[in-house]
Image (cartoon, rainbow, N blue to C red; front, side, top):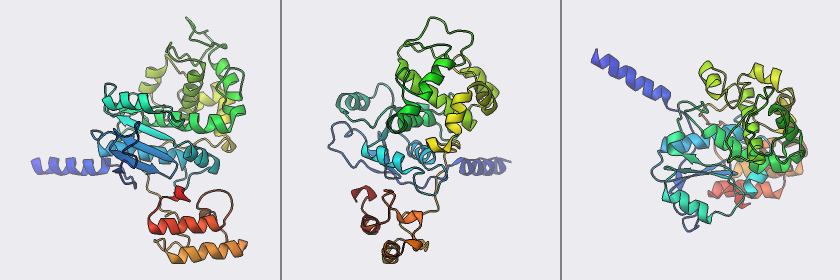
Length: 337
């Protein structure tokens, strides 16, 4: 009987292990005053970085990387779904720092020394659970990574849709409706008509807008669609199921579901292992001189071009993509092109 229980435990443990095809590397910037306290690093699709303290379990570091990859590459073909999103995240050095706790000296160092525009949220080790991706009260990875991608990319690229200032966008107007009025700070009591009633007094209007966009995205994805979660978040957000969201917040449902707005459509499950090898144009499982020849042929004969040949995702296949494949062969970063 003991052997059977042990076997069941082992099988359950194996089944529970997520599949993530990323490698944890050493911190590439050990001398950077803001980043020097991190020892673990993952490069996610060459446009988003995960930095973690040494005490953060590898499983959780890889979980954050998988969630980021799934949100950016929703069809999981190995390429960020939208080139504009890719380029702005890359140019801003977007990243997610993971700290041991809120009392971490690394957090203090990071806050004192970081001066970039690529961080909009942070994660703590104890608020991550790879077995429950995005589940309310268990795993904050989806929320914090969505916040970062939205704030660094969508707000900047599409201000008429996602602007977070009052009266600045479709989303800001929709949020005013969802809150039952335009409140620049948290009101003493929200109107009965409100379905979004966040009451954190430290969160200003812009913060409220970023939180609102998160609720809209995950409601559409169905991440919140269970009784326990719906009851747990009702004091802040009411339309917790995809059906309620579509019926209640019609404007933002149209925004989120419109593929032209480049928001992820499917919920992350914590597994990411694309079959597509960047640079493997002839699909033989390896990037080598044959792929260099393939992209050169495409430059001279546009009928041969496929999307995978646009290595740097600038919308055209040219000599920069040849250099990109050579860099891959040599083991260099793609963003060094």
